[in-house]
Image 1 (tube, rainbow, N blue to C red):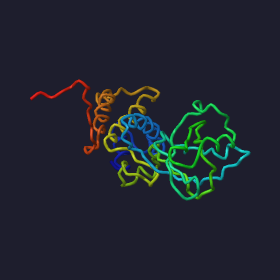
Image 2 (image 1 turned 60 degrees about the horizontal axis):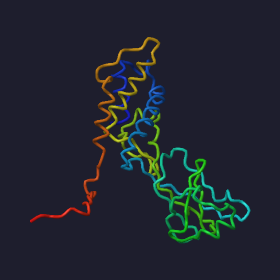
Image 3 (image 1 turned 90 degrees about the horizontal axis):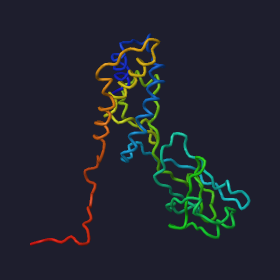
Length: 243
């Protein structure tokens, strides 16, 4: 569904026009609904809102452990994978760990003594909305930190509502659109909020009352979308084949 059609559908459901339900008001409500839908979609674990972000690596400092801290993007939902050029040249994956499992102090000397810039010896921890790197000495490197992430779908704007681009299209290489299966439900949920927040609430249609049931059906339609995925079942040890 294009932005133009989305706005038209919302106004059809609410029996409004551009004066009684302005583009700015639709955008405000639609972006709130969109984020709620996104939080449910990520539960199926199909990486719909995946993106790759890069950051410059800063040289580690023997007197300042915060040089190992890298703030996460504000629109992030989940971290999927982290890679880095810790030595300034070679990419290696960083493994996740929790600071509670590290029983030593976090001064630079201790970190250098127990971690290294090698696969399996470099780690990251997520703390206060930041990614902290535990490794050998970090060399400053342009775009040396690569974050595979799941992000909130991009917000729509008033300009979107007059556009011809499908709302499922990714606006940029680091942002995502909302899957087409949810566009009508998106408009329906916007209509519900509009009607429920009138000074005198407007009764919901039968379709609007069944939105949760229809949403579950849409969620089922995006589960296991990769038909090439192998699902291997393990047989119990005492299972045997009979001739």
